[in-house]
Length: 423
Ligand SMILES: [Zn+2]
Image 1: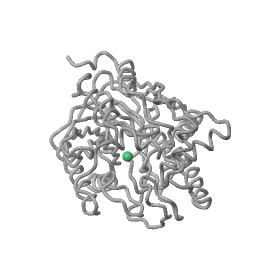
Image 2 (image 1 turned 90 degrees about the horizontal axis):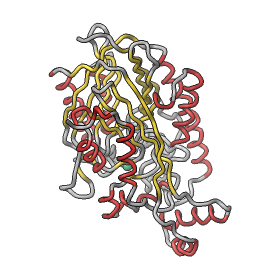
Image 3 (image 1 turned 180 degrees about the vertical axis):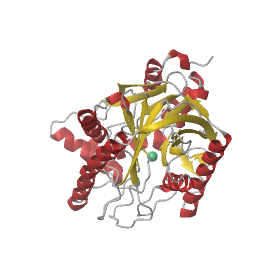
Image 4 (image 1 turned 45 degrees about the vertical axis):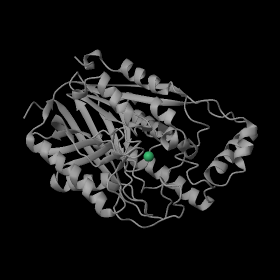
């Protein structure tokens, strides 16, 4: 049973819009929708070690949370509840069936977004900031004594989408919080797979939404959280129908049941956190002539080039790098959680698992910001969608320089205590 070393609080708020809105994730889907197949939520999980300051994780069912929104909510929680930046993280499920947010994938559609659509996107973004603040504060206010345990399971529905025999990460780290009676109150798992089972124009949480629904049905007093690992080049398989999303959700929930039943390893250590921003440099930016040439093309490439020309015309300098947040939460040598921003390819998970003790490692991507895909050197050299081509949908001027992989890996190493090096 373990000692009640922690205070744990949970919160949940319905973030399904009650007006028509454009969904993000797929550029070809350009009509607003009011159709709701499954409601979507933001959930908060608060963990304090003994009477230490609380750590706050918010899980949002959206394709991603832009940097400006994370900063807004972080500032509000800092002011209202004293939650410092390193103790606050937002993870998204990356569902491609949730509303567009302002500043997120602004050039996704390859054409201007009509003003009426944009107004509702802005409205939803403002409402979401309020909801995220509120769901975090409600969890801070309802903490109860708890003990924690964790385990790493495995599920196999994630397949490499660039190469059928390409690398995957089937690990399923699971954190379980139980109250003093031993009943689960929070279950958090992370899996490296895109939430792209479906591409219909209706709101739902995809396989992650169905997994959380299933877990909360089984454990009726627990809140379920599914975050994503390094899933940039991983798709669910099979896909295309709702039954597949249900099936993957059930597969994941079944594995959690097995781990809970089998028994999980207690976590007892003090929770520590740190966050650092590094600069990820872009390769050589095209000159005006090149943008003018590209602007003659139809579709997303031409639209993206026109947007870059507009920036240049207004005297704006094109971005030469992105500011990239890397965050660590760790339980005093027992469990290390790494939070990476953006759509991180699976090579990063394999590198970190090789260079750190994989038995104590939990990797989240899609955390705090979704600036673009984050390719390894291998993927960058191969090119293609995740390596280079997707940058235009995120309104980035070009692809990354190859040192990006090393910059991220070495920054993680600098934040991680030496006790996590493999023995
Ligand atoms: Zn994606």
